[in-house]
Image (cartoon, rainbow, N blue to C red; front, side, top):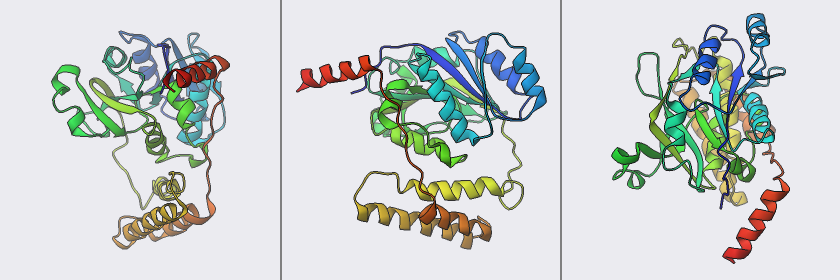
Length: 306
C-alpha cells in the first residue's frame, strides 16, 4: 500500500530548444490557481536564449546538464523533486502550457488524497483545442457511472505532459529508464506505476500541447522512430514474468516492428534498431532508497495488516 500524506507539488520542466514557448509555460505555472510549491527547470540544451532567460528568473530552481533526452531529463527532475521533499511531481516538456486551473482541478479531485493513486493526468489538447494524447486505457466499468460527478476516468497509459506522479509510487516502481533517451520511456514508466496502484485522467484539467505538426519518419524525424523501435522492443524484457513469457513477448514485439517495415510505415533502416533493442540493449530500472521514516512506516503498516 502506498502511504503518502505529503501534498507538496513541484512542477518539473524540461527545457531544451523551445525558447518562445518556455516563458509562456513558466508564466502559466506561476499563475496557477493552486500554485506549485516549487518550479524546477532541467535545462539540457545549448540554447543561449533559454540560458540567458533562465539566469534572470529568481524564483526557479534551475539544474543544467548535458542532453540526456527526455528520459534522462525527467529522471533527473523526479529525483530532484523527491530529494527536495515533494510528495508529487508535475511534469512538463517545454512545448506544453497548462490552463490556469489545471493543477487545482487535479488536487481537488477525489483521487488526489487516495493512497492507491499512483498518477493523475490532464486532458491534452492541441493548439486548436482538439483532445488527443490524454491518459486512458483504463476499465470503463470503474468510471462510467461516476464520470459526471468526479470528472475523472481511470487510466493505465499516458505521456509526460502534465503528468502528476506520486512520490511513493516512484519509490515502489522505480525511476524512468534514463538509457531510453527519448520516445516510449514515458509509457514504460507509467506501465510500471500502475502495477502498484491506479491512475486517472482528470478531464477538467487541461494542458495545451504546441507540437510540431510536420512529422517525417522517413526524414528529419527518423531518429525518433528509431529510438521508439529500440525502446519498445526492449521494454518486453522489463516486464515481470517467466523466462518463456518474456521471450514470447520479445518475439512478438520484434515481429510487430518488422511488420511495420514491410507495410511501409517505417523505413528499412529501423531494422538494426529493432535488433539492437532485442539482443544488445539491456536497460535496467533504478530505484531510490526510501527515507528511514518511510521504511519504518511501511513496516508498521505490514505488521498491522498481518
